Length: 541
Image (tube, rainbow, N blue to C red; front, side, top):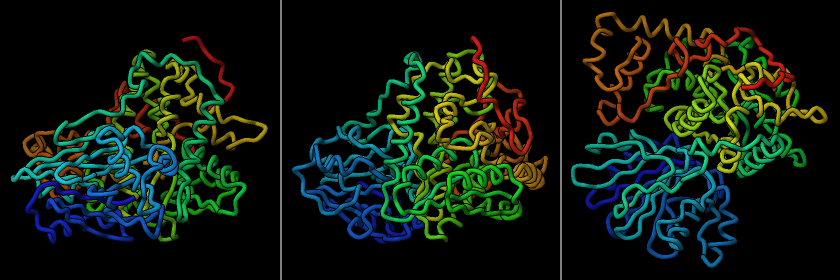
């Protein structure tokens, strides 16, 4: 897990590129290096060592003239070395190196061979290819300067003041100067009409278990983020089972305003039930407010829900790295795949429900994945997301939408995921957690966090200032004083129009209140723990 920067084009000052790369030094605190190719292109890398601690320094040279930089993890790198790349000679044991060898073996058409999360650039003479993983788990930005040089970077801050225009690199694509953007990831699940499969609870359980297993690949201490909600609790329980025959301790981490926070109460129960070494962290509303500017600089967004949820994750990530842990599993993606957000209950039809799940998965890179990456990597912590495994996506999204809709099961959201792991003979989780109502992360740390945050933001923006919102910010004009306040901080650090255009606002559908908090939905029941009934009688839709 790292920060990458590539400048394709001649004449850029090497010392300046080093400075630009250092703007992302938080992403890679272990090593830093830069390489200028014979053609004058520059590759820079800030490294967080997770796999191959000793020989995996980047940029990495291929067999001959090609060089590469990569951010992410390639989970099938050993299999690739033993099969399609068996005739290649490798310089390292790093998972990253397979990328440059795949380029040498197949040219541009190799991204589908990769199983993992990645953003990379390979340069070979004046030829180059940049690519991003299927869902955009790893961030990547691209731009062009006034001399026609191409820039690629893990974070916008490294290139924003160098480029005349820049944008977010689209997930599931690669780019070359010869081909332009090419969509290589074309899964069947993107077609809503293909959602015709009956639910297979055993397959869901086994495929998610395999997704967790491959993400335990690491040469450093790792742990799990445990909010006490269904998704993180399941990945934590699965990981613990997979480590049962080892002497490895599994550390779990949760955060809240105080020990009574809904997430902390549930996480405590899960940790005790599955047997992790549990760590609880706390933050205050005041600390959250004090760190808003720094947080927005790291996140590179003004999206309201991303900022609300990133604050506790930012504090927790800092505390985790101080324990010596460098990698964690996280539960992002399940709510999008299974329609777990409370507003999904209001979907007008099964078809609309399915389309919304697909769209939410496709746009994860603008919201939860951005948060998961940048709030953790702000402190050099890598987050891995098993629910977004390619095989699991293909299985779960193609299940009939009627099988996923909450109204099919008396309002129980994510019923089929819960049911898949409801194994009384050897339970994964306590019933009160397995069947707990959805609580969005920014709410679950303690309801007072969002309520006080909104009050503070409103106190910082006068009516006169807010009346000029459309004039000051004609693109994506903020509609509340809270949104206005975040936008003003973002604009101070990233004043470019291109920067504003990289942000997508997360707004729930099918509810009168457009606030993204889960508590804004009328279905939310405010209680410490809300239990759904696992025996919900299946209704006819």
